[in-house]
Amino acid sequence: MSEGDTVARPVAKRLALPSWLVAGGAPVAGALVGLAIGALLIRLTGADPLQAYATMVRGAFGGPRQITDTILKASPLLLVGLGLTAAFRARVWNIGGEGQYYMGALCGGIVALYCANWPRPLLLVTMLGAGVAGGMAWALVAAVLKVRRGMSEIISTLMLNYIAILFMQYMARGPLQEPGGYLPESAQFAASTRLPTLLGTRVHLGVLIAVLLVPLVYALLWSTPLGFRLRAVGSRESVARYAGISVEWAIVFALAFSGGLSGLAGIVEVSTLHTRLKAAISGGYGFSGILVALLGRMHPVGVAIASVFFAALIIGAQSMHVVSGLPDALANAVQALIVLCVLAADALARRRLNA
Image 1 (cartoon, one colour):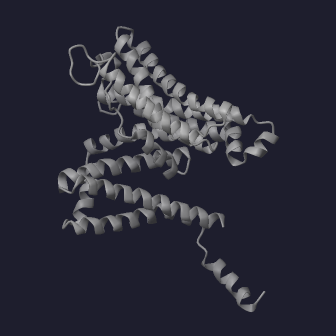
Image 2 (cartoon, rainbow, N blue to C red):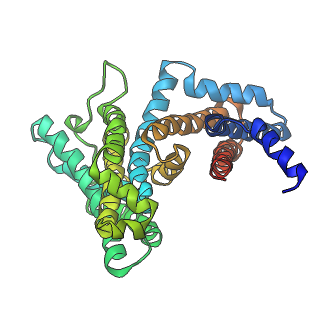
Image 3 (cartoon, helix red, strand yellow):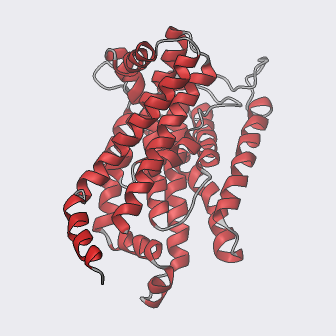
């Protein structure tokens, strides 16, 4: 070893940043870079970037109504993201959250349409349960193809998205269409099917369920034998098999669990926002949930924070478009840039820490 190397190693060690600072500061640095690039794009249109960003913040957190909007937008993202966190921890790449969301909404919506005269507690439990079952069943199609035929779950879940969306369009235009109606939608759900709100606000029971699932998913993954098996399969499949863990069973559970939570997100959103089945019911939550899970580093607490962050970007971008008059495409581009830069910074930080 040369004398230069001998001197350089201690110097590099002294200049090395603490791992917690690298891990925690990377997303912040990424967001700042995204904001800076977005500011340049906004400036090119002749608008004031500071004013546009101020409008963005006020749109997401400017008052009780805006904060409520952000919370409601974060709820389905959190549900989908939590489910995908469990799947991704097992290295099961479920890209079908969108289709599972649609099937959960459809199955739960059918209960809402045809069982509205049931006692309300029984109706709500059955409706939510049907939503979970619908998303779970749709994910199990990909699980069977993976376990029995070795088909990549990335391909199967992605293709199943389009089948579910088209099937919803068929049902909304055909068997479930409102009698005498012209739009591709069902009759409106009865008032008894709507989830109760909390403390007189617009925050509904679905938000509470999503929040309560954060510690439950954490406990599942890090405090139970089942969670250990999932993480073992995700860490190294060959070692998990050698230890006697059923990899196939872990794949089936991971897909079913993530599909169930996506289905729950679907029926919660339909019963509270749309109050009827429609040909198009999702704001892309199934796909956005993938980003939320990655932004949250596949940790339930991180996913909760990421869901609020992502929801704030969506609400803020809409506000920036409406109030500041920026083109809708530009507002969405700024939102995407921020997310992309945060993900890139996080990937670089992980690479540095693992070096």
